[in-house]
Length: 365
Image 1: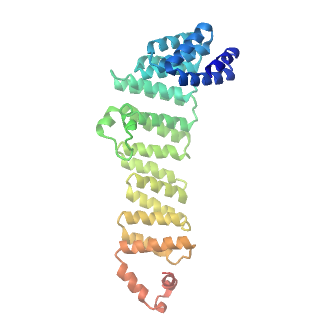
Image 2: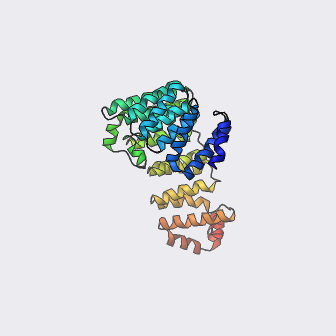
């Protein structure tokens, strides 16, 4: 296969799509037959045959990096960037190589040049901030400030872009502890330890500022408010967190109250969650899902009597078959939780004519 592909590669212009496709086929054939070192040998020969072919030199640099011939790969990338300083892909490949080798200071220098050349590229700025943090051994607070400055420059590129500012907020949050919190998969459900709060004060303050700026840029967007609430909860500021999440229901719709309730419940704010769930149920009583969720929260919190009071109005409302079963189950659960089983049995044992307004409910129950 390689013997057939190589002449074809020599016949096409190195910078068109056909050459790129052929290079991919050639590399797969070489790796299958000769392995990674064979790939280095092939591209070395190509460079010797066509010393002005930039694409072959790129492939050689990447092949050298693959077999950990790092110094040679770095020399190739540096020579390539001298010839093609505007090639974003080359500089990014070089940064990736330097980061893999732990050469963060050199990678940072390259990332700064990349940000200068491509100021509209969000990923370039996010990477630049990360690299500032990775060279933070001598002065972590200074490195955090430099990372935040890079992310502020990113947000300044598009002054009306709320999602962009939110990206900066999440970058600050996820970098706490040099990324240890995010990398360990630690949940935002638990408040941050005092030590991590104090050691990452610059990042955490910036994260809050970015969240509030995202809300200012788009007051109607839900995600910035949700993220701000998460951050405030994380920082041990529960009242502010509840206020931030409650603002999600500013539209006063049942769906908004329901979503707010679910968020509050997820983070353990039971009473505010119940209150929001009640608002949802009252805003749209025809949607059983809202009342059901409200009753479920009351039952989980041990408020059996309140759950029974919420379930009682459902008993006399005819519904579709599956919803009728749901209502019966909710009612039974509430009766049990309220300790009213005997009272309800006695009520159902009364003659129908004595029940008055409850007659329909008795017949259904």
